Image (cartoon, rainbow, N blue to C red):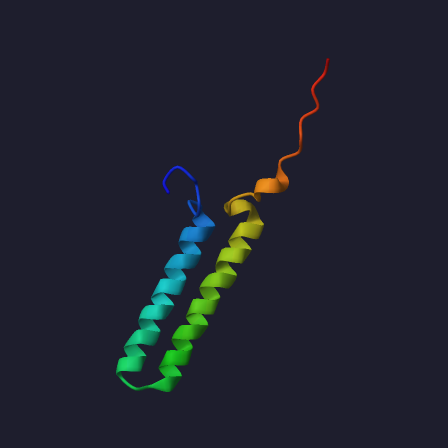
Length: 75
């Protein structure tokens, strides 16, 4: 897995970290039986995805694999 560069970008790390915090918030509120807190945590999870997409759009993510233009060889 370490040889594949999958997710090794600031956008991926930031999005996953924010989503993880949201899951922790939601889990804590599930134990406390507070539905409003659970849904607030789910909003934080969604925010992690949005932040990751915005950062990828700003160039901090991995470039799509098909984005490289083919090189023309001169004879």
